[in-house]
Amino acid sequence: MEVTDARWEESFFLDQRGGALKEWPTGSEVDLEEALRFHLALPEHKVQALQLARAKAENGIVVLPQLGQARMETMLEIIRFVEQECGMSDWNDSWFMILDAYSRKKRFDAVDKAISASREAGLNLLSGYPAVNHGVPGFRQIMEVSGHSAHLSTLDEDPRLCTEITLAGGASGYLAYDIHDVMQHSRDFPLDRRIHNHQYISRLAAWYTERGAPILAWPAGHNNGWEPPGIKIAMVILQSLESARQGVKHIACSYGLMCNVNQDVSALRLVRRLLDEYLIKAGITGVATYAGTYPHLGTWPVDVIQCASQMAWEATISRIGGAHFMYLKSPDEASSTPSKEGIGAEVKIAKHMINVLGSFNIGSTDAMQEEEAMMELEVRAIVDAVLNLAHGDPSNGMIKAVERGILDAVFSPWIHVKNRLLTVRDNEGAYRYLDHGGLPLPEKVLRYNQAKIDQRSKTSGKRADIDMVTEDLYHLAQPVGSHIFSKL
Amino acid sequence: MTTNSNPNPPRKVVIGTIGSDAHVTGQFVLTRAMEDAGIEVVRLGACVPQEEFIEAAVETGAHAVLVSSLYGMAFFDCQTLREKCIEAGLANILLYIGGHLGTNREKWEEVQERFLSIGFDRVYSPESRPAGIIEDLKKDIDARVKALQT
Image (cartoon, rainbow over all chains, first blue to last red):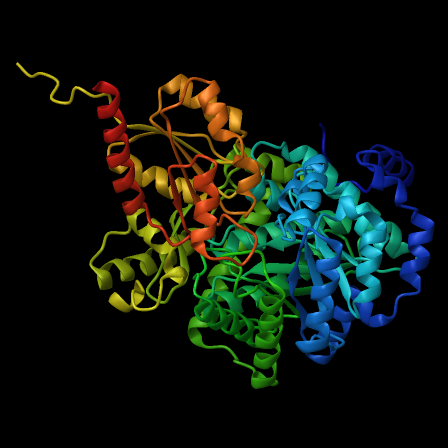
């Protein structure tokens, strides 16, 4: 498939919709004109783009707990519980609904069986909310019961039908992913087709936006938790450029936390600065941009108190880093799908830390400035290399960059990526490349990176090797009493 | 002149994430640890159907199938795995599973029992580490091999 970043003609877009909507019977529930009227009637606090704009203007932060259960009644029960009893009642609150893993692979038959089995067993047997099977009325019910805005994680290979259904249901955001998803959740899906699917949903979001219902694009640089910030920021910028090419006007870049203050704060500052710059360089204007955080995606502790501590730390970093939003994680997520008490706890933890921190600004230390300067060199080197492969076209450039290892991953399930990156933490807990594969990192960045690894080796007396990589995977998951770094 | 001091073929396993699960970090780590321990590993990667685990086990003569799962839905994915192994002539194969194995808050013993009841030999929690799994694996494989020889 020949892929370019060119904006889709409306006739081509409308033609494509016919196929996607037929993939499951609930696709027929999507009526674009009716859905547009529903969106236009939504109050400001139920529209994510407007919430983010207010957060940016007023130094606020949008808070997004995650929720996903098989049965409709459980979804609504949890929403009521968290909103009525756990303080989720402010203008800056929004829901992030998690799609179950079968839906992510379009196994809607298996989802139907799991919903029935969940009903019979009185248990939740899916890892998220089956948005396609519950259809447009399902999401409308959520919008009706909840006092807040929402969007859904339409992960994996083909989010077209799912995005159609949730946007028609009243979601005011969608996940603007392509390379991020195949690298994290796909076994062998071709990137060109994934880009095509991303262009479809971005074009759909632009359709609503152009008619007065702003839909927020959520590109991500979460990766799997082990990649240093530079590669994540590069991917988030590239995906943002693609979405904006299709006419999206509101973009919220989500950055996956490493839990190291210097790296995370620097990353947040850099995303905000570079995204605007690259959009302008690409000739794209009139786009409102935001940057915020997603919980660390490495291994978490199983102990709920330890988890809660880490969540408070993540909320702190997000706030002092000037994030416009933060996704939350439940303290019971290391052992189950989040319960209502777990979701309630995460909301309370985040809101408490926002209160504690007030308008505190961490400023910038020498170490932070150095980190940000190195990260900027790295991000520019990667993004420029990708764009240069295809005369400034991010979509075509990404395809070529993956083949050359210019975009790569740590422990990816995707067979098309080189998978050469390996990382270890340094003495301060920041992530560094043990092997940077084919990433086009400037010499200065490589020297900085190596010096940090050498310091760790010197202090610990251990060689930086694959054993250290493995040991570091458990860094944040260590039961209290056996922390790796306390033994250094 | 040297003779082969170990009359048994090397211990061999097949590993992958089952069903629609794409989370492969666990199998990367475990694969490396098993290889370091002298175990031959056939790594199948992400989103592996039951049939592919079985085909790989038949083809390679593996002693064990290790299912890695993070997304909480493995019970659905694994329900007929033991029966299909038996149909494929793998009645004696060891079946291990480990990871985040449920979507509800419940005691680990309950989760473990659920998987033992559908034919798994060992069930590991998210807190398990490679060393313990490898120790069990060596012990179990050697016991099976010995039982089949006698």
